Length: 512
Image 1 (cartoon, rainbow, N blue to C red):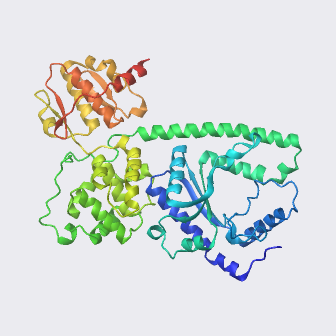
Image 2: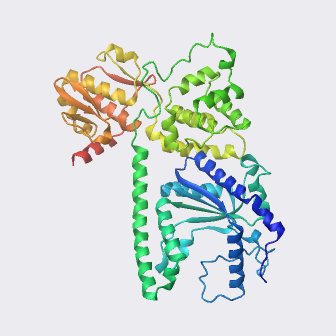
Image 3: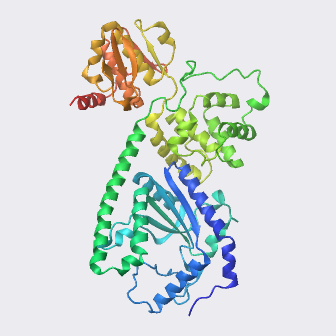
């Protein structure tokens, strides 16, 4: 029996494209919320013509009228109990709507896969990589496929009456594919020039095998490209200035900076409420999406959890954050709501203190996911974060100005280099432990973003692009080299203790 599209079926296509847009927007929101670095997210609804073509091909296969067909080329009908194997129907297909998420690295791909598993209802046996089942001669496809029949918390994210919610009540499910950019390039070429190519099918066996061999080699190169991109992302994640998130141009900035005098300000500016927060965040993040009222209530809650009780105090803190840098690292520019941008900026500013203060806030199921979300985001920005200017150089041999002026980590390193070099001679700075971070009359690699200092008659180049923990280790080495000098590094009012000797190994590797 040949399936014929009914008037009722045709009505589905009035709203299916909008349902596809909704799942696309939902995936964009989800990936941005979890800071997955995405190249592209897209979704489409099948056209009526394409759908009928697929249904008729399935009918033909089931009735045995096609000989030698590739079983992988046409997926079987769903085996749900209510479906007839001899009467394919649009609602029984799992790719009436299909979405694709393309990411830059395998790390982001794996994170995206876990998010789909966590946030969607995945059908049994529909969580797989089809490439893993291919014969050796046709290996190379690397993309994760899901068929989902719902969102675990639809009312919170897409609304109970949305087109996407209606879709899940009427159709078998929708398909989501996740792959890296390298895997996408390989898959697109294979899809066009082997899977759907009449030219490939017209080749003799030897010609097809030659194309298969070339694509198999390309698969090996693709794996190498994925590995190279993973390494590039790792280096980019680790290498960034310590001042990335905090504006240190104003020497008045400090770890314990006092909010501006609020006594003469108007009540509208001072009150921390959903209304005032909405206006303030809209001005601060003009390209971000408008939050819901519930989102704004959550924004007020996370601010108050830090002990910040007025809008002016919050704005004073946020003025120190380089928000554009935070958004770039978490890939949220133009994608997240203003409250999410606030959440990220406070995380960058207060770090683990913020995680501890806010990890249990929010409503279920968001509350249960929040600790993992914060940990993931913090893992992306921690190597580049600094909690304001919190370092001071103290002691009898420290210039008086430095005893009270708080510095960034990189600034404290430069101050110590200047003091030790001027008082004991530049030759002291040629210690092997400093070889990777201090160059006396020699420039450092460009990646170090070194600053030049004049120490006596010498030009000294000082690394300014290391992690916070490495910067503190350098401070410890410089204090050790200071010998008879009375110098001490204080961090947030507490003396800085010596740290591990990992930098010594880095220096030895640089000299070997």
